[in-house]
Image (tube, rainbow, N blue to C red):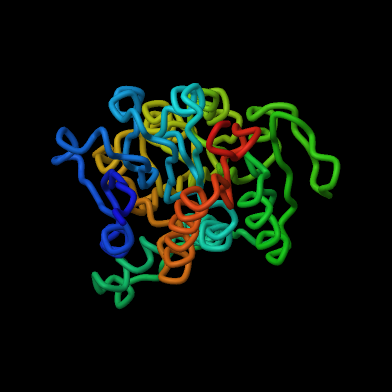
Length: 315
């Protein structure tokens, strides 16, 4: 009995790439032309583009299993119009992303990276390192109080921070103060942590108005998507001193990072690794494969994306 044919859209981790090959008849993009008629599923990461043209080229495609909580890499309207099921990997990466957000905030406020360079350069032998800011007891705004945002909030509460948030709608079951807009949120806090989903609806949500509201002593942390922040506006705000600092895990044109940001001591830069721990990636990989196997078995998904109202093959 032949096995289902699954398209692997890079980049995938070696473990996920190999697991798909072990369990299914795997096809890579380079060999797609001769196998397009056979492909019933796609496995991708949130850095691998699955656009409308690719979806249209696969007449038997029924499921897209995305390795990542974000799925703005997928043309969801094109998929749903065809009745193609789409899954992601929520919840299993909440803790890792939340601790990365807090780590970035601490690193910027306490100037961890400049202090490390100070010691390595031998400057401690000659002078004292300057005093820094502090996270404990400060006011932190969370832009996007979903599962990850709430995980960030609980960690900040442990540091004695006052937490507030902005979502499209006020949430009824949270103890944090609500701001009616991103700019209003930024104006009332010392630091702003961005955890909203990517996509057209949040593109450049953090713009000059928001950055100016955060102010010259403010710190921006982004563990969401690079598209959420107006990157040229961010560079300008930092260069002009209108923003105090930033901790960034994501960028507009990854893996390209603006040279201006690289040169700034007020910025801490990570290579999109917020969920990059061994246990988290193992859990994400398992959930991706479980979604695929579940759909192939009975047309259901363990974690369908919210846009799906049903999870059957004919949805």
